[in-house]
Length: 168
Image 1 (cartoon, rainbow, N blue to C red):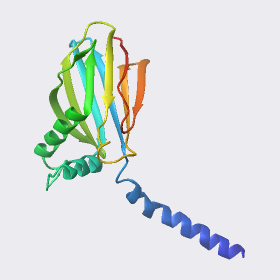
Image 2 (tube, one colour):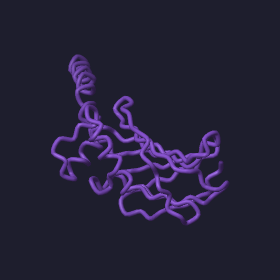
Image 3 (cartoon, rainbow, N blue to C red):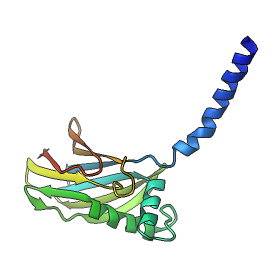
């Protein structure tokens, strides 16, 4: 009886690493950070999306060869997709974000955007629907601010915009 339990425990422990790659594919979470950089007087937006999820979104839009890691064109196509799915307003005025670039960090695609910084303590309205058109269970976290003064919103499919002051 004891030997049978030991064999079962060893089998379970060996199976766990085999299951991890399957779980690592579709993470269904994106993290966006919106902060003002007082040194450059720019509003900086960084989106962090798992590479596999970004490629899946491009394929869902009809891109036949979505290669986020190997193709700058794929990364830029995903950045355009993000721009359509991410609402950002400052004091009721849409913020026109400019694409700065992207990079792969670990298993994530980082998309960098920026715009002129809004007035001090502007009210920022945001809604992140990135990948919610691909997966209904997608969760998007948006962090407004930096340092110890951060407001975090969590968005899922169909959620409306939320707002908070953005301290500079």
